[in-house]
Length: 114
Length: 113
Image 1 (cartoon, chains in turn purple, red):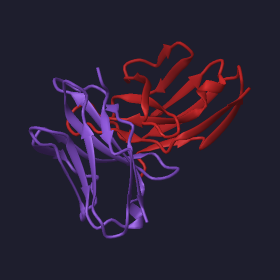
Image 2 (cartoon, chains in turn blue, brown):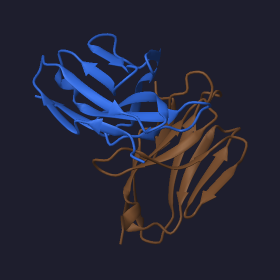
Image 3 (cartoon, helix red, strand yellow):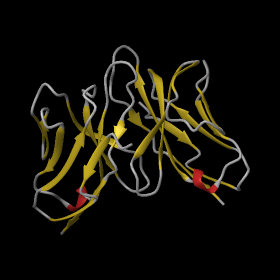
Image 4 (cartoon, one colour):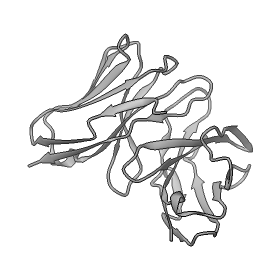
């Protein structure tokens, strides 16, 4: 049973470009969470999605960031016009439906903006 | 605003010693308190978790102590081993409604052989 998968594992973008981060949840999981980890800091919640729905985006920056979890395919975290401050590790986590269970985390995508 | 405060920031322990990491929270809606272990370049992995209806939970060498009235909880690693060297994060979450995890800032543990 494969765990949470994220790709790419490392992504380098120049300032002003777009970054697309992908997350495939564990089999049987339909809840997806995105977290951001800045160097030497803890993980900060960004957004919580279920299939085709954004449930909680209270942690998302107001501009340039968006997330989706379509009916088919992986969840996508999209960052437009990246800036140096977007450099971080972005982690996806997933959990199953039917009551709360602790999410399982993927290996992360390390974004570097040059 | 940091909803979960964690200390110390770093910890060095001799092999065989006890590692203790402390966390505190304010939000009384939190009712699930996990600890995650993270190795460099990897995602956080759930280590052990507790709910507020018990004061202690033990799994192998790892024990969580929970003080509901003080809104504090701690991780104890007994007989610490070099392989335990990692960053440990406490977290807290409500399990109803918006149930995302709020993480502490992490403790970098180094166990010296």
